[in-house]
Amino acid sequence: MAITAPTKIGEGTGTTSTTCVITTSVAHNAGEPIAVHFLYSSSLQTASVTDSAGNSYSQSKRTASGASIVIEDWISNGANALASGQTVTITFTGSVSSCAQA
Image (cartoon, rainbow, N blue to C red; front, top):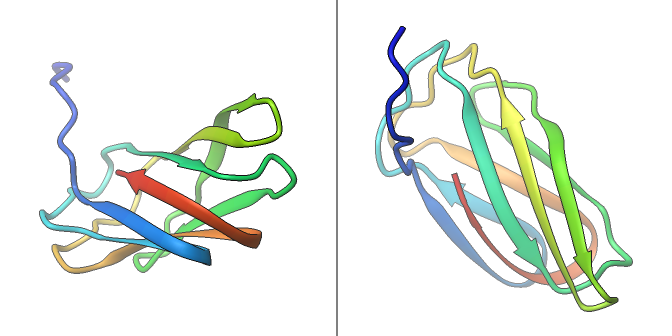
């Protein structure tokens, strides 16, 4: 299998909330990895990632810049396809300002 450049499947900008939802703008094929990159406004919170196709995600990196900004990367093996219009949801343990891309 050849390695190709990643395809952005969607982005989300959260208001101050406990979730940030990315609605996919293009389809994602089954079996291809899905990477989710996001930042949020409080190092006192933690996050989890799910999608509407039932894929499992695990955190691959977390970087905190003091107490104010956290950057996280999560990955899924993408076993299940995501159709255009499906969602990837980031859930935080408390209310934060956030933005994300998958």
